[in-house]
Each structure stands twice: as structure tokens, then as C-alpha cells.
Image (cartoon, rainbow, N blue to C red; front, top):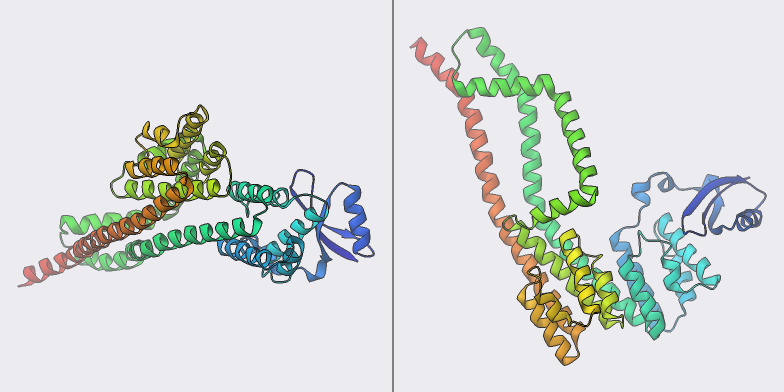
Length: 401
């Protein structure tokens, strides 16, 4: 019979395929002879449709939070790591999570530590996650560190959700406005102005502008779509390069309100992650390097890496931060106070809570500014369209009278 298998090679890459075999044992022997670690073996006919749809088969951020929280609770209740993973395997909702969990079990059965097992799944476990687990294993506080990771992930999820929900309305309004405008230009306006053409009347400037725009959309829609798609592809490729991303990230910080929001988000993520790593027992320099990976802005990432080099030379974190304008005074002062009191992790976590509140306030300010601006633009566009349509009719009536 045909069996589907998923395995992991020595480099940690996933290998899948179909093989003709009598039973699962034969497949296991075949994979091990090729230095592959079997993760899952099932009859080919039993494969879920989710296996063929990568988007649906991809683990979500919420599933990572739930996995971490449940694993922490089970370890705290006295279960061993293997027992907890075996229980979680039966609760997985997606094939991807089930296979990942089985891979962790297999790796641990082969004698590898949990921190080494999760490195095989970088899309699910970030470098910060791995560093925290590695520190927890050396201190014997895996359940407590997992709990702190879960709390950190929940705060990150809450912050992103608040931003996404606040910006949802303006985005929907803009998208609907663009769709309606395109439909009007392609289907409605041409029919209306065919009537004006048959009447042989002089059209005002506003009406000629609308007609020209409508003709352009109608005749060159395919070219417009190709240009937009090609431009998007080029910009995305350019942004992936180091110079392109650095240029974009640098100028994003200078945009009014938006730049302030990005800075506050970077500080919230940085201080929370750094405080979590230091609190778990990780070295300060290593914690700074790992924290640089969570910020989404290259300018801040480079500055944090430079900060780690200064600290490595013996400079305190507060003094090292004071040498750059990217770190606000409150972060510098909290870092200095934390170093003086020996509670650097707690000071950084308090700073992160402050910036989370600031992010939410800035998002409210941004949406408050965007909504009336969008309404004004929409009103002006509608008014211009109505004026362009009605003016020829008014002129025709006046000529008749």
C-alpha cells in the first residue's frame, strides 16, 4: 500500500513523500537507513485536504500561545515533558501542529534537549523562544519560563490586535472607495456620457476631466493592473535587500504620527523581550543580541546590536543607551534605576507596559486624524463627480429656456 511520510533530515529540513510499503515499520526502516527522523506516517488515502493547502496548514500565532500556555500548565502540575507533549499531540487541531509535536517527541526520545528539538521549527519557535527555553533548562525552571513566554506572547498578540482593530475601519473605507470609483469609471460614467455625446453640447472642464479618466480606466485597465503588479513586485524585491529596507525603515521613522507609533512599538517589543530574557537568567549581552531580532525596524536592530557591543566592553546599559538618540529618556532612566537596584528585568518590563499604553493612545490619535481626513477626501470626490455630471444637464436646460 502507499504510505505518506514526513521526516526531518540532519539539517532540520522537512522531507515528505509517498512510498510503497507493507506497513509503517518498513517505512521507518527505510527512513532511518537514509538518516531521516520519521515524524508522521499515514496511509496516503487518509491525508487531509489541509496538507495540500499551505495557507490553511500553517500554524497561527494564537496556536503558539495556546501550546505554550498548556505546556506550562502541565509541567507545573507535575507531568514530565514527554507526558505533556503526548497529551498535547492528541489535542492538536491542524496537521501541521500534530506533525510538529510528533517531531518534538521523536527528537527528545533520541536524547536531544527540548531547546534543540524546537530549533527544527523556526517558523513556530523564534530565536528568543529558543534562547529562553535553553536558559530554563539550565536553571530547572522550564514551567515558570514557559508561563512567562505565554504571558509575553499574549501581550504581543493583544498589542497587535488593538492596532489592527483600530486601523480596520479606515482601511475598509479606503478599499471600498477605490472599488466604487473604479466601477463608476468603467461601467457607469461611459454610459452616461454617451448620452451627452449624442446631444452635441459643449462640455465643461470638470466633465471632460471625468470623461478622460473614465476612458483611461476603460481602455488601459489591464495595463494599469500589470504596472501596479510589476511595481509591487519590484518594491517588494527591493525592500528585501538590506539597502532598500534600511532606506524605507529610516524614512518611516520620520513620518508624523506614524513614525512616533513605530518608535513606541519598537520600544515596547524591545524592553519586554529584554526584560523577559534577563529575568530568565540569560546574559545581558546575549539578551541584547536576541532582543534585536524582535524589532521590525532595521535602524533599531542595528542600534541594539551596537548597544550590545558597548555593554560587552564594560559600559552599563543605561550609559550605552544614553549615547544614541533612538532610545527615549524614560527607557534610559528605567535601565539605570534597574541596574542600581539589581532589578533590571522588572524595570524594563514596567517600561514596556508604559510604551504599550502609549502605542494604544497613539493609535487612537492616528485613527482620529484619519477618519475625518478620509471623509473630507470622499466628500470632495463625490462632490466633484456630481458637479461634472450635473453641469452639462444644467447647461442644456438653460439653452432650451
